[in-house]
Picture 1 (cartoon, helix red, strand yellow):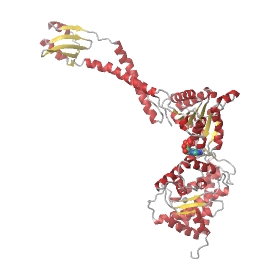
Picture 2 (cartoon, helix red, strand yellow):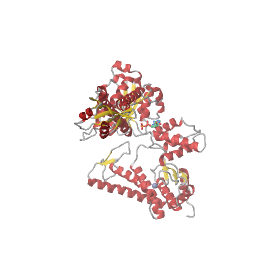
Picture 3 (tube, helix red, strand yellow):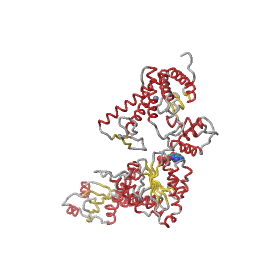
Picture 4 (spheres, protein in one colour):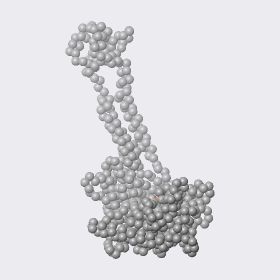
Length: 610
Ligand code: ADP
Ligand code: ZN
């Protein structure tokens, strides 16, 4: 990525600084230097010298008297403040051979002009810039001194982005939608001849890390056109009007370089709905208005295509989405099983691998991971290989790094008492057993009680055979039962409960709640939407859409679902208490066991001595 600095701008800064220094020197330092020989003194010294007859020449000005005194045969100039003294002239006259003159203050129109106008203006200008730059930096904007209202949109010229569609794994629908734009950028004339208007902009919508930026870069790479990239937050400035100026500047730069791609990341920061609140965000609204104007204004046939990315599409101003602006909306979703495998393979090309890597297994264990997380997994695996002194990445590196990305690094030297270790082991086996004893649960892949840096003291990993897109009511109930399995084991075996289940409780409640309020899975409410999801791509927090009375009933329903699931889990574990003990003992000994080992013990005939 090569960011071009603007050398002309920098020279302008130096020249202005030099000029200012020169002016200051001329106006302030020079006069001081020429007067250096004149000493300041007080009025009484002047009168004394006059009386003693030492004074030779006197020059009377408005507010100052300059006089020379003979001292040791040399003339020394003095100056003193003029005091209102009506007898002064008489006194001078009487003292004989004193030459005295009056003098009007020297008029220097140039100096007055400099002092009165130029220096204050230049000074204020510099101070303003300094402030602007400082604040701009702190607020995450890019502000170069003297770049008054100019944007510093980074210019990535084609050859260096070097990304193509081959670098983007999966996301076939998005690539297909963007291929047309690539074609348009290649030969705009073809479209112009027929009179077809291509979309001026396309909006890439999806969760963070799914490759939106990457796709935009790939479009520029495929079309071999320059790539302008700026983040929405860079438009948000301290002063009203600055953001708008940046937008204007960005578009003027882009039009000069057409055909090209302008990529605006996080467009929601400027494109939020204008709510018209009193004291609303003037700066943001002006910036948005400017963006709308520019998008309407420029000639789409020239070949400037604007791609924007967001993970909050619902908060965008409808004006942005109307035809002629971002009228294409391209979803960039989390990758599915095949997509994850493809992303892993694309990134694995950059590292050395041993033979027989099963990417499918890794992809299955990473349901819900984004492209960025998968890229990170491959890199973690490479780091792990280096750490253990091997020259290629193997399967276990990849498997371990999946866990690193999910749960953090192993805390090998964490000191956990034997008693607590036992509780943790029973807790995890509790989850695993409840999962295994229900037919709708995903198979257990791994159980471990090695603590992780994320704070997890142990966990049970379940991996589905295939990608699942739907969840049935039975599966949801089974999942809640599995989540309560850990606590149930603690209760059964130790007759107590610990804080270790807090995460399970949170997940179980969330799922039960969603069943009631969003999935229509409770007979009490039937298919009524009681909650709406706000941020689909960012955590998905919800807000209630029902009366307080209904809310109370929802709470009842949710707790009854969880309570039933808990009772079911306790029942399953009571029925399999022997296996619970057996597997927990095995886990305590090994610290980590695989799904196969777990199933082997489970299937084995009960030992005769219990
Ligand atoms: P977004 O802009 O959607 O937040 P990015 O495009 O910045 O995500 O993705 C971050 C990184 O994740 C990319 O640089 C790339 O390494 C990796 N990545 C994400 N999605 C993919 C994908 N589909 N194929 C290959 N790499 C991907
Ligand atoms: Zn648990």
